[in-house]
Amino acid sequence: MAIKVTITSTKGGVGKTTLCANLAGILADLGQRVLAVDADIQPTLSSYYAITDRAPAGLMQLVSTASLEGIISRCSVAGLDLVLSDDPGGHLQNWVLHQPDGRVRMRHLLMQLESGYDVILIDTQGAVGPLQDAAILAADLLISPIPPEILSAREFTRGTVAMLERLRPMACMGAPVGPLRGVLYRMDHTRDARIIAQELREASYVPSRGAITILETVIPATVAYREAATHRCPVHRWETRRTGPTAPALQTMAALVHEVFPHLRGQAPRWSLSTDKAGVQ
Image (cartoon, rainbow, N blue to C red; front, top):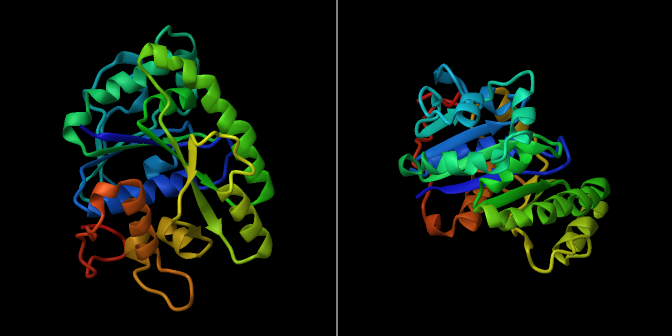
């Protein structure tokens, strides 16, 4: 049965899509069968990697018609499939809002796809709304990237935590809210970033009563993540080594996967270092 993970935050621009795409890429290279679901009306995840076999439909059809036919696209990363965002007008938000089972429907539909995958990753928009609610309620585990900046830290507390508390009563409809893991994202070497990161770890900003865990793995603020996105390549393939005190992206992403998915500890990505940086196999 697939593990369903939603990448979420109520603040836009914190790196959700980049994190989702790179997690999907390294999980696929670890031999996992991965499905990435683009639940953002701005379809950035849908175009992150080159599409080699585009399905005629995507998330709109899946949720609104409960049909699994013709929704799975293939991309250039072997082992990674996509459910594309196909709702540029944002109509799915309104549809979910006005359906009695709208917020829990995605959960039950994705359960029908679990037998074909080991991990299902769901990307979300950076604003509170019915579609983000549905993506959160579909997950077994939530991951929230948190840039170590004061505004992002405050929004993590005010917005994300409040959103989770609001959704907890949905457990009575068979959709309990999964545990939340925060990952410090775009961490730089400034004193301010170190102070905020320490306060987050000490739960100074997060009155979660143990429901939220800040992961040990930290994603650094390095150019490799932007370069890899530009070249439509998983970052662990793009930066396998580097000089200086900051770990290369291959090491960082492997550490993150092993922390989030402990059953994969000890496994190394199977892709060959001879694979070109465009990520096409």
